[in-house]
Image 1 (tube, rainbow, N blue to C red):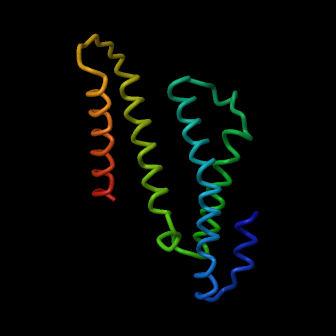
Image 2: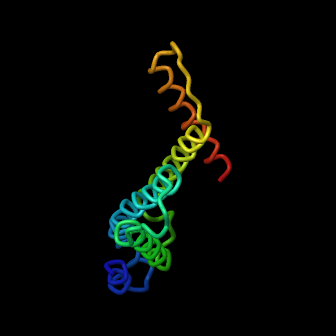
Length: 142
């Protein structure tokens, strides 16, 4: 609703829209942080916990995603995302979360149980290295 009101107040000229870009950034972050959390929660519940679709909490699991989509659509109507401050960081954060969930799902499906003498620090470094490799590959692809 706030995005719709800012779209009305910002006017139609390029200079007027340009002055409202920080307000758009706040609105994008205010909508995307709960939306990304809800999306991550849904992926976790459906992939790892195997929750039924019928057991969904609509307010907690669906409404933030719909709000995020509507906010991004309304902001995109007025201003390209490259002009929204910090939007690139938000997109890379979402990519990192998606890569992390993908790796964890793969490890969960692998059903690998290993007793090893490798220190835990080496495992963490390997995991972070894998995430950085995925992020680098993702930025090269897109």
